[in-house]
Image (cartoon, rainbow, N blue to C red):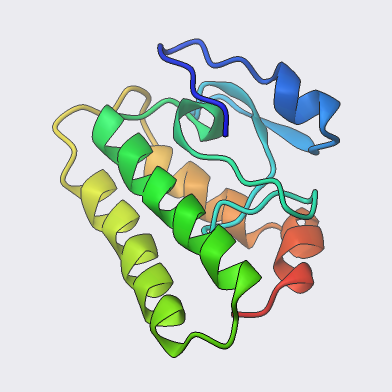
Length: 130
């Protein structure tokens, strides 16, 4: 677990860890490719917060919850409650983003959707079926 504060996230650890990156002006620059479960293309490496795009602290905290549940779900897929908790956490990120008072860059929601929909996410999406 790595924690950093501020609107200039340090991406070096994810880069050294082997994450693929993409550029999104709406999300504030180069971000690690990840899915809505916060999984990257590197097995066992999850991201959350401003490293995934500049948004509010509330969105970052909601993403952290998703990352935590993703780790727990990936470690124990036999727990039937974990899938439901993970799904609720993913929905919470969306509702938190939609109710944000400030949008740091225009088009954040659209940029997220495009990023999650892109074929280049196949590496992390195909790795784990939900």
